[in-house]
Image (cartoon, rainbow, N blue to C red):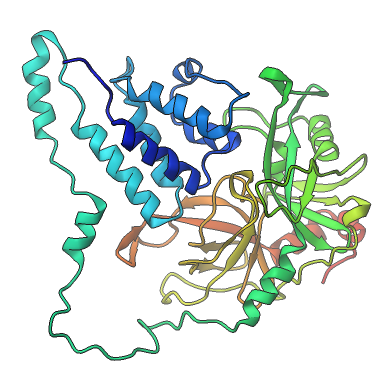
Length: 410
């Protein structure tokens, strides 16, 4: 029988629609999604930047769907679906991607020729994976005959907040920006095919009046395999970086405001922060309030405190990360938490529930305390940031001129 691919047409449409719903369909986000594939194979995938993103995704999904496996044994469709499940913040979207990945494993065709029997046996040995709906139905208890009574609090923690929380978050959002950084090498701006600027994005915010902050690695704009930007290139990348304020709608195509010459004040790779002067047009935006004391939590204490992030994950319109947003560990040097983030969230402000900034978000890492279960999921990774007081202490000790330039200590 002719090979027609791992997924049928209806399943491919479901995957495409889930990628769009999960905010993984912009060119920048989809490139990050495909980064799990070998570079040589990525270069062979169809690419037509003139088409709408949804049509580009359709073309690439159909191409991957017809590849049984690469020379090294990798199955492109399974790799991308697993990566999408890892990126998706919504449980229903994760379930769909995981179910489709399981279907790919179950439908892998047996090799032709002498190894056909062995391949068939190997395929038969892969246990059938129940769908997400089947897993949910099996886990749901029967409520027949049960007495139902009202509950004020489900579990040990009250998850309700004053409605003023919403107003505080909306006010804070006006001082959080998307930052776009064009890469420079040897003093020259870098461009990709079609003369597209070779750029990456992150999140920035008002640290002091007229002063913005983001991560050093956001302005550095290098991959893990590339050496750091030379000092001159780092300066150029800061000066040509663009801030986009109030970016909350996909249809918003404003290019943003260029930081301009002399904007970089100080950058520190160790604590991963960078301070810069914001353009005059944004200088009157209020600085966010800073916590005077770090959030403290040891590995022995039960989870309770929560933190919230205003961010631009994958360069998309601003999103609020605040679900399952528990603090895992907190001290003078680090704040670790479970709040959802993604690429492009780097540099975001980490707020407590009163909208005071506790830390500068940096990234994710393996869990710093023993693994634990949260709502039926084993937690193995955490997001983390640098407490704002650690940044101020570093400036006082190692860059007093920069500290004076931003107005001194709190």
